[in-house]
Image 1 (tube, rainbow, N blue to C red):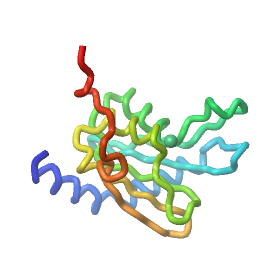
Image 2: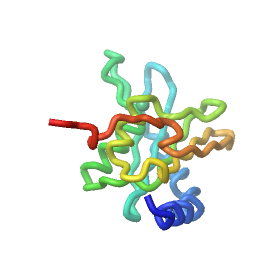
Image 3: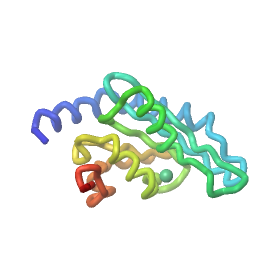
Image 4: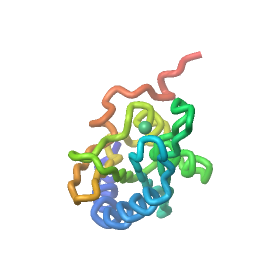
Length: 147
Ligand SMILES: [Zn+2]
């Protein structure tokens, strides 16, 4: 990863932070969580476009899909292979990080995990920012597949 990537991502974080949080918040408004009532919204930025997702629960519980994976699926279907910025909004304090399954899914669509900032916020305005590499430092990656 070059310093240019880091500099570009730092600018994206500064310039797109508010709009990405707003998009995540709007996605959260559409989340489907009738069992836990734990609504989550996620927004991803890639190539100037924003992809969103909300968690979608299921009466069988095990089929529940997290907001982050819904957003990743939306981005992947649009051709995204390198997510540039991520925001997740919950009611947790401190703001909740994506679960392990979602971190692995984000890794699949991140060419630069040390430069993918994940903004964690809650409804009271608490905010934390970590990189994907910080939250999942040893994620499995497709480069490790050997045949
Ligand atoms: Zn998850």
